[in-house]
Length: 212
Image 1 (cartoon, rainbow, N blue to C red):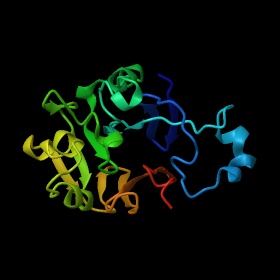
Image 2: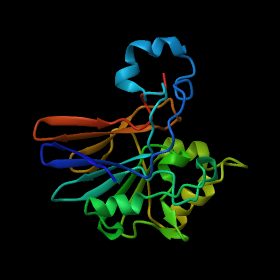
Image 3: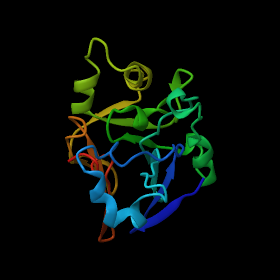
């Protein structure tokens, strides 16, 4: 339930997670990087066993005007591929003072299972007051597929049927000081989130850093 908080002007960013999976070999996120290239960074970047630490990250972005979350983790589970672990997003949000009904907006950086997993719960929006922002390019890539991955019909397509979906473009303001930043590659419509306030700026990168 650890959280890391930073302030960008009058906007607070709180980094939490859905849950922390076991560490993996560095070749999993970076298959083109030879293992020996990690040697100078072992102490700073890897576990004592030489593995790459991971988490299913979620960000709370809030000011006096709004409460938003960026991405929603892998979901409640239990997740068979993670030894049956269950997601803890709602508990970890509560630990930083956020109840689902407090959230004004959910921003999905892209449509992948570990970023949309708590969008829907028991057939309803997990965050009942929120508008859900999804990249139009990603929506147009994933949703027309005849046999999409299961998380698309489970966690993405229902957003339109539930009338909470906003398809957004690059460089679109979502809240005061919060804009989409087009960073395609990891998915066709991947968007990072640019936060600017009182002359300061930060970027929530999504999955840019491990996608050359």
